[in-house]
Length: 504
Ligand code: ADP
Image (cartoon, rainbow, N blue to C red; front, side):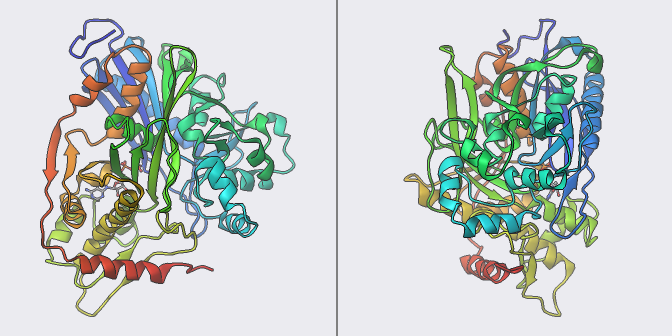
């Protein structure tokens, strides 16, 4: 077992995979918790219809192999020196595949995809909202996997389901990593399918019946920290134990050291996700936040220790910056948005609603669509860019208000991570509107770090979670200023209301 700083053993490394919405990355960590090799590949986004989004599972698997091999090569180590592999993935995105050929029957339907909104509306009208919330902690929405699985199965009614496997991205990649041997998932990912019962932590028979999903095509649900299997020997030249699987937001929560009530983090990636740990209790919010599994682990008595979380999911944040870059072509790189926003002293009266995929917390409106408001002839591209960044911060402000309303202790400081947290304008604006400090660590990739910590701790490579968390250094604290009028937030909320029920 390694205490931090001891690097002499032959099994001296942990490999962590973060298979995100924007791209796939692999990091090699040494026993000090330092990164010694890494690789990243952006993932192709397919938009077959407005509001739909697909990923190619074969590309995800091929890129996973490439980033693993490249990161190991960059680290200049042998795969046989890796003690364990931790896997974290974009959540809810799901697929079905042929277990004989290993080929997906269709592209994966991504969490942001709205194609099943009509089915969700039907379920709401039939009065299932309360039952589904009680069983899963979730609000009926096309975001979660259940209706996506239903859509896929409806498309392939003539297929022999005895030859079909279903799963989220962790399950698909685990199956491939183990050479088709292991068909499993963990509780944090399963809790996002809308098919897992939050209390029993198992597939819910009533929901399988409701969505007509045969139990035998679903993976086995296992503790997030624990042995899932080993990588197939031919893949990397060594059989590496896979000892942690977590949903990306839960991995970030783990990496931030948020393992008890009162601790929370906000990740600014494709979307923004504010998650608070609620201990071993399911906390129900009356403010449109969802209850979910943080992570699970078998305790020494063989029983399951379950940590729960309360989450505010905002579907679109960094994705708007990609849209400014790739579609509107107002910026060449995501980072350029910071300089653009700083070129103007205010938003010029422009407000943006980032409802590309409907709105998540606290509105849960699948039919809302994005909009710019307040355009006049004097508006410049800089104002548009600034309005987009401000909107990302306003969304988080609304969710922090919902968390404060659900808890007796108000949020006093926000720990941040994810690609868009690199934007200093955004972080300063966030601190200003929240009125609390925003803290950013040196290592912004907390998601992949969380997966590494979990895998290393599960296999006894590291002994102290506290020591791992404590060595994460603060890079910058954004203190709140006082010059952002809250009336602007009220105007932004007015803009949001105008986009609701747009497609109904
Ligand atoms: P995910 O895990 O969801 O794939 P990441 O944490 O990798 O997301 O972050 C990528 C997202 O962050 C992209 O949507 C990108 O537009 C955004 N992003 C990256 N750098 C910046 C920046 N400097 N300013 C604003 N947004 C950024």
